[in-house]
Image 1 (tube, rainbow, N blue to C red):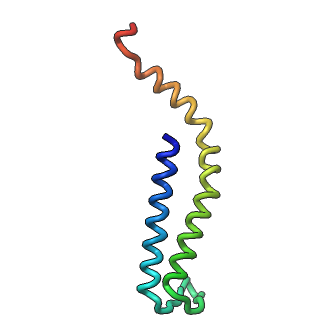
Image 2 (cartoon, rainbow, N blue to C red; image 1 turned 45 degrees about the vertical axis):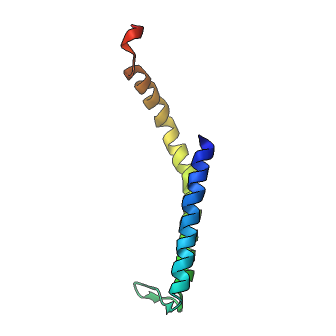
Length: 92
């Protein structure tokens, strides 16, 4: 089951990389990013997309262990409650 999940994650990531590559090739015009009063130098759209996707992947890779640590205490009690709720009537 874990290998199928890893395969699906790899396929989705590969599709995103291909989409970013196609968009960046078709949109080679330079753009300038603005945030409040700050403005960046002009860089191609593909580079902006690549940096954004890379930052998102790295950010999620760093945050995922923190989420699993924060939710580990609550999941055990919830699983025990589910085990008591789903009881087969034939066993009684």
